Image (cartoon, rainbow, N blue to C red):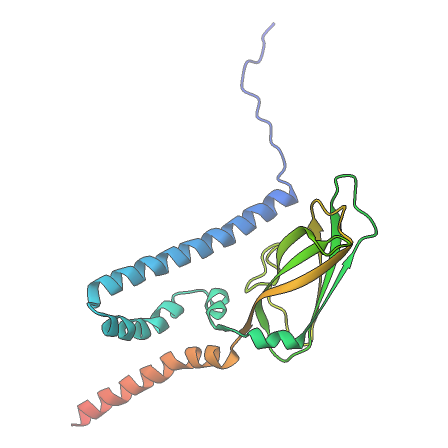
Length: 219
């Protein structure tokens, strides 16, 4: 006799992939906001206090500890790396291809990176190139075997000393490729001494200020 005309509410459970995507998005948004905030703060300080190049350099050196202190530790440590092209001699890279291309013409290529040195690699970018029987390039792929942070499949994180990283690369239009080779384009390693110095510097500066204040009171 009576019909229920109310609104029906359907609740759908949140999947694991959705939760993971939200988590990764939160990390990326936090990193972007931090970088934008630092850039805005730097521009404000430079515009307010600097008028020539020597003053600009001096002000930059003075505010670096303050900028670093405002970053989360995971992001602050990523600033303490240096380009080390010669460290490639401590790397052993092996590239292995699948037997044949799939029905779309692509191939999965296995890449093995061995860090045989004593340094932690913060960034290792490279190119995987497929050539035909005559040595002509027919496909290529740009990848990062090591990154400052680990977020997803493309951001694999740093590569520790004496560790081996294995990854899979999918190359398109690789049906004519007879051989795959690798080319290193960037190597950066983490500087432990620089991080420890940056962490201890604020405490030392504070102690010096307190001593100076005590001297003034005694005088």
